[in-house]
Amino acid sequence: MNDSIAFFSGFGPKDLWFLTQAAWQTLLISVLSISGGTILGIFFGWILSESKVVGAITVGFILDAFRSVPLIIQLVLFYNLFNVIGLAVSPFWAGVTILGVYTSALVANVARGGIEAVGAPMRRAGRSLGMSYLQTMRYVVWPIGLRAVFPSWVGVALGVLKDSALVSVLGHPELLKVARDLITRTQQPLLVLAVAGAFYFALSFPISRYAAHLERKWQS
Amino acid sequence: MNFDYTFHWRPVIRKLPELLEASLVTLQISVLSMIIGIGIGLVLALLRMGGPKYLSWIATAWVETARNTPALFQLFFFSFGLGAFGLHLTPYLIVLAGLSFNNAGYLAENFRGGFQAVPDTQMRAARSLGMSTTQAYTRIIIPQVFRIVYHPMTNQLVWAVLMSSLAMIVGFRELAGETQAQAFKTFRIFEYFAVTALIYYVMVKMILGISRLLSWRLFRY
Image (cartoon, rainbow over all chains, first blue to last red; front, side, top):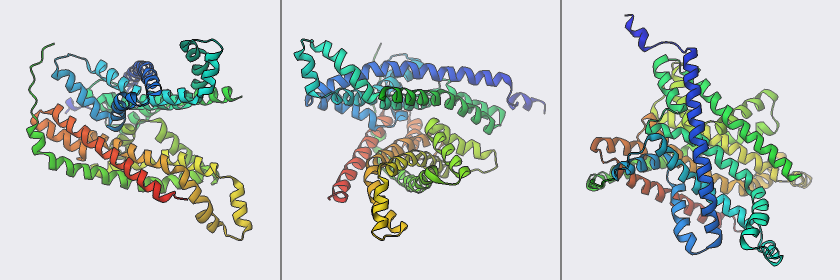
């Protein structure tokens, strides 16, 4: 029965390389969807803060739906929707797109909070100093609002980094998918899971530490 | 780009009773995991604030693992990971254990924040009025902490409902799992998941609505 050796072989250095590549995929998906989602989310947040009634019923309602439906359902649903309308999208880009829109729904709330954290008197003061609307936004609202909501934004980003694991349902070989495949082959679940977990920890822990550091620096 | 797909909603409507029944399973497992999570989370928070050194270290490890790894990873640990020790849980227990583990980690941090937000002077004032430590905790400290952590707890319950959809991957038939099973039987994947998305939306809104009503009743004073 030497054949079985080919199917079930132990965890080797090559597999560590596999997992490293998979972690790279996870990082790539996260960075793309977080940056895209943040830009989109700031725009939505601006709409929500400027237009309290119309914005809340249209944009607010749609974004709220994205926050109220499990991401995994959204991924399967929209990936199939892309197929239904005849768009051939790779699992990677479908995942990035859906995760990006999901991120924007979370960031919109944060961004709105940031804009509203800067009180109307402060903005009026900016305007009466002769600044244009855009200048007030850029030199008054942005720096103050950013400091107010930066911690929540980091929280969102870390959440998305972890949620990127769900792109595995579309079949893209990111960290958790590769880990699962390796478990099936090596039959050494604890080792593989420990390595995969260490990768996630290595990705997210430094970010949360750096954010805490930045927060302390800004407060002083 | 050519559109040649016909929607078929009838198979989904026919299976709607099954889906609704499965959504009750979702609610049940989420609420149960919340109850377990609150219990463990309280213990973890108290241990982190001042327990024996090694216990507080375990609590920190639990909280950091729960918060810094994906929930799906935690589910995998309870399915494959415990399997390595020859402990094979049923899919229901895997999901329940995974959700409870995650809830406990997040709630512990909320509780810790809540306890730290209540000033020490409250405790001293209660003690100087002649209350015992237990009385001071149950009558003075805990009610104030509860008020602070009420909204984070509601959010965590919503998260638990959303997170329970991961059960689909480990093969447990709650709402998402049932949907997947039915969808792949009929290949009406889009239609099934659209209806399921709607059910999740309604469930989340119901939880938030009930929680708001409760908060009016609870925090009248």
